[in-house]
Image 1 (tube, one colour):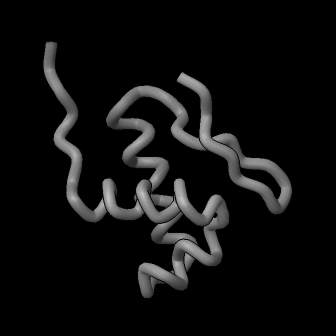
Image 2 (cartoon, rainbow, N blue to C red; image 1 turned 90 degrees about the vertical axis):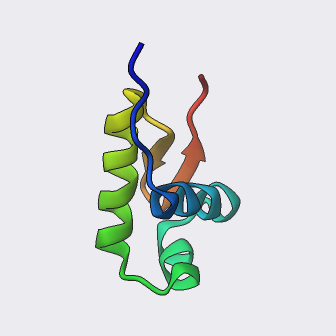
Amino acid sequence: MDRPELSLQQLHAFAVLSEELHFGRTAERLGIAQPPLSQQIRRLEAKVGHPLFTRGPGAVARSEP
């Protein structure tokens, strides 16, 4: 089975977002704007073929496996 190529940048963004559970605070911590962060996470989710976070109005939660 092929494994997706994951960048360290994407994995770091995932780890920080898992801690913060907030895109704005995560983007601030990483020193980037929020839209590129969202794009990184969406690309990561596409690579692994599963949503990693559940997004709601003003809330982010880790998705269950």
